[in-house]
Image 1 (tube, rainbow, N blue to C red):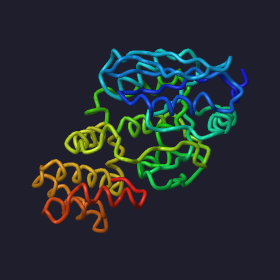
Image 2 (cartoon, rainbow, N blue to C red; image 1 turned 90 degrees about the vertical axis):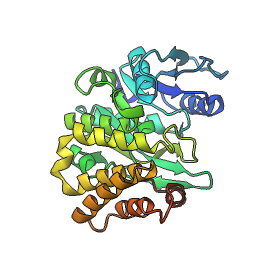
Image 3 (cartoon, helix red, strand yellow; image 1 turned 180 degrees about the horizontal axis):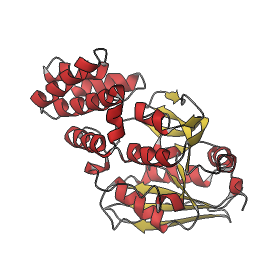
Image 4 (tube, one colour; image 1 turned 180 degrees about the vertical axis):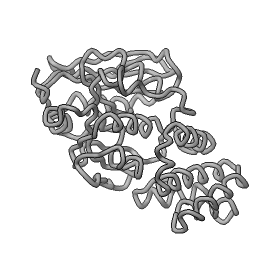
Length: 306
């Protein structure tokens, strides 16, 4: 099989965002890619209604209802298990693939036969302009991802060997609180099996305009990150990495009115890493000197995330 044009299944989980979902599906079907593409739209706790789009001879579109755990993790898994092809790609329903994504990405599986996952860099759209994020390298290691989540490597860019997801890597973790951080978790698990090559130019556009399923779910955010820290003990081997994750936990705690607990976590971080800006911001929110909405809005204007 010519891997550079191998058949690909694209999984698009969705929940009551028909117009955004239609744009996501169209961006897949419009790819200038020589191989067949199957689009599986997974409807999560909503009526299954596919968009009315034109299909070329080598493009297919079908609906799947998520009958697993409600949320993104369960919906992704429903799509993975329903996929017809050996390669499975992810796309969130509020993001789009940019032209040339698959054609640029799939040859990397041939160039790196051991790769289980291939990504691309990303563009983040805040509604006013795009912020391009590139990765520090064209080949991402497990150690790189322990030290830094590498936001350029967004889940909407992922293409996996399906056999790895149902085998050595494992499916998306449905035990994560509200599914938050499922992308970080699967990246850490995938990179522990093999390095992750990527096309280091923005080939997905990620919407950062307040529509996120997780926006404002601060308590669950803190719970999920605490879960990830316990699940991946190798993070604790890097003081900087552990401080980064704990600063996010602190921010989630103070933003969900668990101010005393959040302030204590922030202080623990600052004792290890006095220049950690996120911990200082968490402390400011915990002392009622700022609000999470103000901090998050300011970060988004700079093309940053919490």
